[in-house]
Every structure is written in structure tokens, then in C-alpha cells.
Length: 195
Image: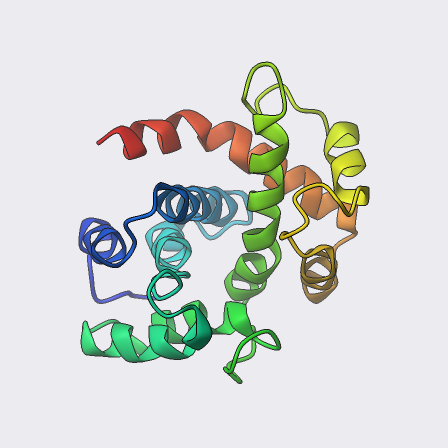
């Protein structure tokens, strides 16, 4: 059983204390919800809290130490008393992108690597819709946005594609499942951010 060493609320307090930007808080809450959804969907419901906390904490260091992203997170999380398995899971989403050599090995770590950038793309696409929601977004619409390299240019299509490959999934499966995850958790994300 994977353990974190902290409660979800303690993790959220840590993220909020280091990330004042509403965008970073929204991203943390979104990735937490998406990771929890994936845990349930992929048959890891007993580890849902672990998956969600990894999602919540994955960018804990990004706002204050962007040049040391993932490296600083390992140090911070160790100081805070998180478990080695949580620290590795958080750090490995930067494998090949930052200064960490922690490689995604577990399915959960591969899902985080794949879904992290994709949540940003889906969120940006949702904001362009009249509803401002991803609940009524179709896969074909998302695929169109994915192919438009100028749209949400900061969301790396290469990382998303690599993430699907790491999981052994077709890109469409990753796009579709992450879209489903965001649609299913949208209300809970908004409620959590309103707290």
C-alpha cells in the first residue's frame, strides 16, 4: 500500500503556502482530481488518496523555484516528512525535462507524466467554449486543439505524446480519458477552489 505520510488537507496547505498564483492553485487542484479519477478508473481505488496527493503536490516548487523544478520538490517534501514513494512519484514527472533522474515506473507515475500537460491543454480549450466547461467538449474538438501547435503553445505536445507511449496507450485513449476525468471532476474542482 502506497502511503504519503500526510493528509490531503496538509498537502493542500503546503501547496497553497508556496503557490499564491490562482493559476498554479487551480492546476494543482485539477491534477489532484484527475489523478484520483484515474486511480479509480484503472483499478487502484485503494490508492486514490496517494494518487490525488501526488497530483496536488507535483508542482509544489514551481512558483518559487522554477529553475529547480522537481529537484527542489524532493528537498521540500523530504523536509516535510513525506514518504520516499511519494517524493519519487512527484519528482519523476520531470524526468527528461528537469534536472531529476527519477524515472516514471509505476502506472500512477506514468499517468501523472502523461496527464499533467494535457490538463492544461484541456483547460485552455474549455475556456474557449461558450460554456467555459469541458463537460460538453467532444474528443474531436480536443484533437483539433491538440493539432493546432499555436493553441496553448506552452502545453508540450511532445510530452503528452511521450506520456501516452510510456503507458502503452494510443494518443486518442489518453486524450479521451483525461477529458472524461476533467469533465467528471469539474464541479468538485470548482468547489475545492471556492474554499
